[in-house]
Image (cartoon, rainbow, N blue to C red; front, side):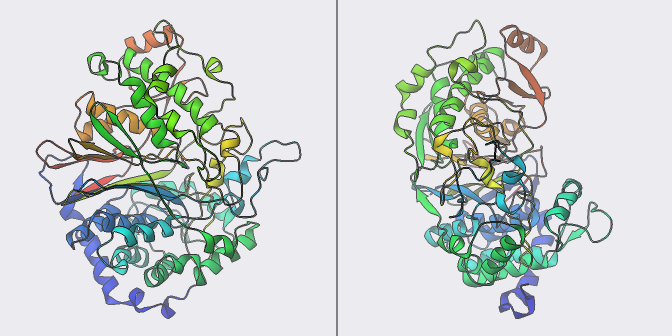
Length: 573
Ligand code: DON
């Protein structure tokens, strides 16, 4: 167990307490709620939690840049949004400096060295879903802490400890649960109990969590203090790493001290492309998101979406047919580029994408079985989180980070107080066998030691006339790509403001299953009938995505889009 009293100064002291008070008391000041017409120019943070957005804003106000603020937000989310904020998961960052420099940082989890292609198959070669989704074996080697350190080393201005302080304060001093936060923790209590026989702070000692309860996470505070003191080494080496390995040994996991020590975040070249004159800067493999987003935009660009209108039958039909083709490509071609040659150049070729749309006809729905073969499955609940940050100079950070499923593997590292991911399920556990998002894959995304599992996360920055225009991204598993696609189209083609574009009802198609998912009231009854008559199988489902985005409007002010589908909130000045 980490002992708070033995920890370096930073944890016990006044500094922390000051921060804690500051974060809690100043929430009212910069808090925007869900929409604003105020004129913010100095900086903005939009995230899944008001505490995290406020932590980011405090860093901006101290003179930190967008990357400093983003690091503080990532660590704060690990405390106040345990569903998806994390130390034990991974993610991606897309960055654009005010001067136009771009970068993509990959801190995706990796399979442990002892992982094998068939590790989740039973003796009959059938996938054992519980194993890739829950418990110790489901976890990949976490990447978030290494990612934050790499981002800070390259771009940060303020000291590392300063960026960790708000998160430590929130963990040690506690934060107030929202009604939704309380309900979600209660909903997961059985899972937490099952996978944490030694107990966890996420389960209330007596009774159930209520709105306004203070959630204090001392073990997590101690872990964060180690990271504050020693950087990524405070996580991948030393007492925290030992606790992870002990947790693995107790629960039959395979991650070792060597796996942890070997983990590195990787700088990659962003995927870039043009859509209606705007430059799109987005995430390359091991995310499929950036390539898929660019393919979708290229496929619809020749068509007059603006004339057809938002969520009208032609608009939906065209976008769905593009999605059918792009998700079929995803299944066949996308995987960790360090292990599998992704034909990125070809997939991003405009002629290729125009050709892909050649077989499309307006008369009737396309048929996924004729686009390519595969199996089908229903999508499941999803939990990841996205946040967007801009500073007063116009530097922009777009980060999507995840444990994969809600609360990841459900395993909280005993003594260290953080949840481990269940990202191993993002691998193609068996060729053609759907994962929790109904996504299928094959060799490109098969499990191998040290390999990164394919992702859909699509943190994106958009540039207009050489200047920052939009920062956008979302959770939602397989729906991430189509949600980012629709949000961009809503702004660019349908002239929506940032909040309206985020609020707008969404639809989703992913090749397999051959169905189109719709949020409630996404389309009118006439559009519904027209599409059904053409053979589209329309299925109403719950919320799609949880987009947190920022737009720099034509007057140079920042406009927030904080998704009302969650507790998301913007903070700005
Ligand atoms: O990387 C991926 O694509 C998934 N692990 C993301 C999961 C997710 O978005 C869950 N979200 N709500």
